[in-house]
Image 1 (cartoon, rainbow, N blue to C red):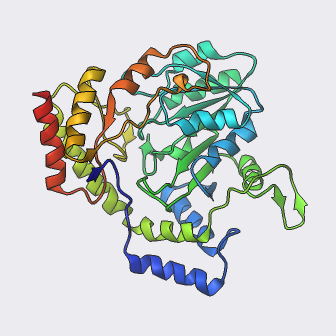
Image 2 (spheres, helix red, strand yellow):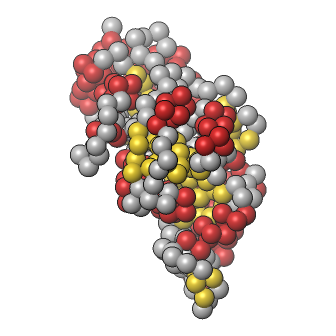
Length: 358
């Protein structure tokens, strides 16, 4: 089988070395030395001052919404993974969808302005497949209307925009370190704050509201990363350049062989250093997408429709139609992309698509 993705596994000796440290310390959780080491390494690599590792990639969204949402209206995108919308609902806020930009697939800033009401507290925008939103426009809107900006950057490890890490923008950015992501800790995530006060509040929120051992600063939840997850992250981190380079080669090869067919991918936003986290193809209509998917499945190749359905069509959501997002959700398919994908496997995928579309 050729799946859409596979977990990158580092040298087992490197992982064992970190696990041995856990055995010697006897500490498995509660911000042990490996979590602290991982946070320090990530801060250095990503040039970030405020970063907290978490138990998964969804809880940072919930924490950000607990801090900023105030049970108000959250303007957000319908073209994202379900966790984005679920976190909004889970925290007692109301998702207000606005449609996306046709070329970049990210939330349309002009539509954000029209959706703002006195109840709006935040903009929660997703950098889609690692492609940045229109950051300048969104942050101008937030400043003009006194709103907070949360970026769902689940796919964005290693993405740079305008010479800076993508996590440098907005009030808070969140990232997933799930096993399927480029950088992973088996299960985990991170929350990035762009001012010290918010970081202090987030620290309490992710640790039951603790302020020291015997005092509490307020409400909190358990979002702490375990030492075993941190060990995996520290074993994977030294290989990131290797991983990025391999994925770029794979994406370049897809583009070379598929660029003349009647299918396209998103337009990368200018000033962006992309991380090649996914390779989504947009087909001209649903029937063609289904035909390609069926042909790939027949050869035991499993692509994926990551952002289906358009989130405004979830059964627990009441929303207006989002024609661009709904159309893309029906027509986009992500092709296999992972470090161990062989040349022969990739060419099999390419040749099936070529044959199907010829």
